[in-house]
Image (tube, rainbow, N blue to C red; front, side, top):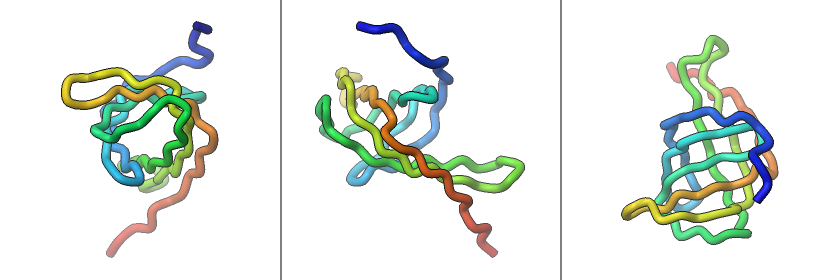
Length: 96
């Protein structure tokens, strides 16, 4: 198995999958690892949204598409490692 290409950063950010939710555990420039109840399989394409708030520029969302590279049991959840195919960052309009 090849070594990790990019430095990973720990996180507990909630992610919104197409048909489920999850919690991001770490992220790098090339991929993400998250836990979810969704039934995902290696090789499957997955889309999800991350929302970052409290930034100096305001709230930002990232629409991501990734390819599942591994799935591991994590109690009642699954740990999913996925490699990014695309990421699109968008500003979230302020409400009010």
